[in-house]
Image 1 (cartoon, rainbow, N blue to C red):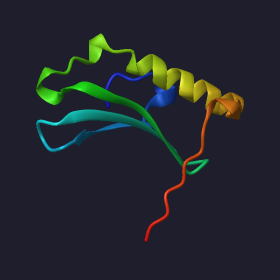
Image 2 (cartoon, helix red, strand yellow; image 1 turned 45 degrees about the vertical axis):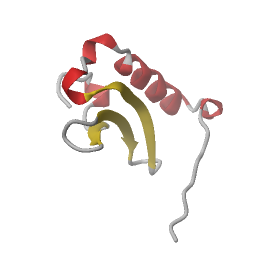
Image 3 (cartoon, one colour; image 1 turned 60 degrees about the vertical axis):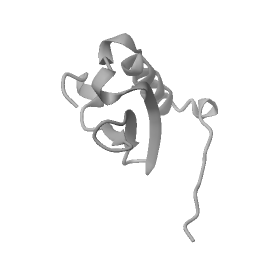
Image 4 (cartoon, one colour; image 1 turned 90 degrees about the vertical axis):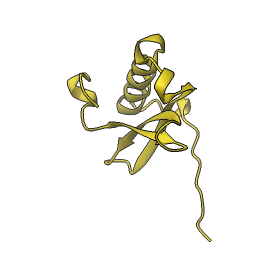
Length: 83
């Protein structure tokens, strides 16, 4: 993703859910803690989605701040087991 604050560069990613015209999913990867955090799922399909209308960056900033400050009570751990 472009135009991110330096401390979030290389940590935030996006992908499409349900193909090219699907919804946007933004997530954060923390390699040091081997964690992935869901940040945002768009309520509108990709072609109608405007990044400026939603506070996804503010959400990412708060998650990052909680993570680096050790505020682990803000998180809930989910683990999925493969079959």
